[in-house]
Image 1 (cartoon, rainbow, N blue to C red):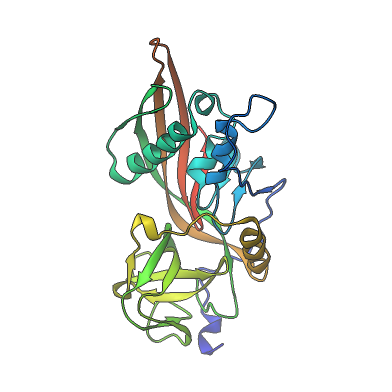
Image 2 (cartoon, rainbow, N blue to C red; image 1 turned 180 degrees about the vertical axis):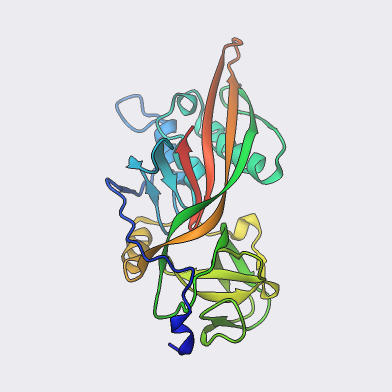
Length: 286
């Protein structure tokens, strides 16, 4: 490292341990309802879970915040596994449910949808949204990061618009620790507060900063796809090479409420809390 190693005013080194984390990798797209003890459509919903971090089930997080249901890419889909509202839907309806939650989150507008197989209709909307400054665990390659400033969480895939340096801190006066080529996809953990720099990651750990004008958000179809079991295991193993630190971050959480109406007129309501995280959406019990 260069002489900026002594300038780590924001780097709060605390080990973050998550008790009872289970990496769930499900591959059930080909499994429909069998009627003889096989997987049902709601079980197959688990196949939507993916991303480098997989899904985290049963983890206990901050006091009074509830149970962590899923984290990373595919978290919104994974959050509904086993819940009553998902059991009322076909596989197509479950996909509609997950997509409606994502669209409501991104647009801020209520989403009306229909299960084409069961005739169930649904309405999903963001009923509450809050942003708070919190200490958030971020895995970091400390041999590449010279300074860790406060960030606004993003947790999404971006594309390099031109060849660029990756820096050890949010500025051109920091050393170059790598580079990106035009068109390369990269995961953005967050944007440095009050500076036009993104914090990016590789193999699940923060590995440097890139100027914001050199990256653009990837369209939905180019976001990180669900991972296979082997890919998830590999990414999880690679991520252990970094050190987890607590970083000051602005974290936005939304309360999504879904009402589904059966053909007979009966109504079921469910709510999930969707929060930004370093690796993508984090879903908590509402």
